Structures are given as structure tokens and as C-alpha cells.
Length: 344
Image (tube, one colour):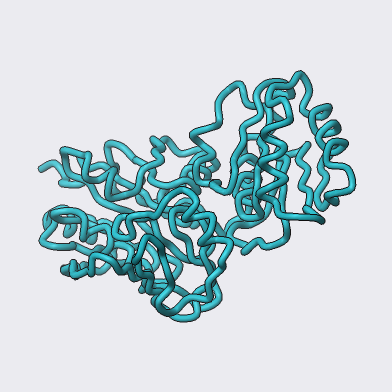
């Protein structure tokens, strides 16, 4: 009889499952008909892995909800407990979910999901099978971010809003603003950047904690030296939407945004000109393509300098190196170069 795992789609969340070798191993064991990748850094890790997958920029719940056939989620949480919590969050948005959590070696069958599929995956992988139910109770104006490790960065919609001081961070939306209730050492500038785009729907916002990827980036051949310069201002998670074959470099504004753009573009060989002011949160392993330059603002904030450059500098160039030289001249003594990989 045909194996129940022959037809399902595997949906992979996060880079860790690729970096740890889980995805390749599960493909060999389960033979899914397709592998879909959810998330920005997962896409980077997937591209570096060389595996035959299809990358999306959507969240796992959105990807899974759009599938008409059988499917299962693969995740490797930073801890087994955070992995289980993540699966519960995804399951709360779906009628049922089969969740393979590689950090603990568990196949969770959430909310009466496809039991036959879950049992077969558990048999083929040797993982434990755990039928579970998600807790869907949630106040309309309050959001809990669970599974945090004290000291790590906390994100809302890709922007760091502070540092966790407890395992659960509680945020509240009230009076047209967003405030921390407990478990967070807030970063006022982070809240400012978040609210600049409008008050997020706290129930549906993308919230997470910890590094976006712990493994170092891959290194690729240098990309083209002429073309368009993409501008990414405090929203590194939008980078893939801006990258195209005509891009020869990236102007990144903000410490964490510069780090994320540098990490992603390292594999593609695309240099980054980063504008920072020294308030980074160490959310990703550093790495930059050849030709990259990072400057630290000495007077003012990276926001202002970055916006100025995006407004006054031509974002089409015949030479990335010449564009960088002229940009440094425009900035003059207002910045100091902290990373310079030109000629490297």
C-alpha cells in the first residue's frame, strides 16, 4: 500500500532546520512531493543548502492554510519548549496541524490533525508522537510572546522593541499606542520605529524573540558592479522583495537592518553600504560580501543620515565602488568607517 507520507507537502519554518541538516534528512526519510520554505532567514539557509525547495515570504500558518492537500510543518526551536510553543501558535490559526519538532524529536498532532500522517511520520523518523490541543484564549488588546530567554531581543513585525527579562513578554495595545506590560526592557527607539508605520494589530502581528539566525552566512561570488541600489530602512525582513537581477548593492539603514542585509547578501555576493549608530542587538551572525562598507554616525541618528542619503544620492550607478566613494565624500566627518571590505 502506498505510504501516507508520499503525497504531503513539507513546510519548513526557520533557518535552524536547514543549518542542523534536519530538512535533508527528513526529505530522504519522508519523500514529500514538495518542500515549501516560510520566512526570510529560512530562505537564506535554504538557498545555501542547495536543496530543491520553493521559498516563500509568508508565515507558516498562511502557507499551510493555502494548501488544499495534506501537509506538515517542520521546525527546530531554540529550545524544545519554544518549539512546542511555536507549533501551538501556528495550530491556533488552523483547523488541525501535524508539526514535526526536531529540537525534541517529537511529532505533535495538534487539534485532531491528520493522525494517520502523524503516526507514519513518527514511525519513519523514530520521533515520539504527541496528540495535543492548542489554547486559543487570547484577549483582544493583549499579546503574549512566550518561550523567550531573558537577555534576548524581542521583535514585533521585524523591529526590535526591547530585551526580554522573563520567559513571557506581555504587550498591550491601548489609546492608539503599544506599551510593554511585563517581561520586557523596552527600547524606546524601537517602539518609535514600529509605530511610525502605524499601530500594528497586536493579535496578528509577527512577534518573536532571539537571534534570527545563529549560523554564519555563506559566501558567494561578487554580484554585478553596476545597476540599481536597493534601499532598506529599518526593515531588513523586506529585503527579498527589493532584490532583483538589476541590483548591484544595498543601502541599509539601522544597526540590525544592516546586519540582516549583510548576512543575506553575503550568499548572493551583493555588497552593502550600512548606516548605523551603535545600538545593534546582535540578532544575526555577522557577514558581508566583498565591497561592503559600514559607517557609524557620529552626530545624530542613523535614521536621519540614511534618509538623507536615499534622498540626495543617485540610486542607479555604473560603478558600486565609485558610488561608495562619492557617498563617503558626501558624509564627510559625520561618520566613521567601521567595516571596509573594498578590495577584500
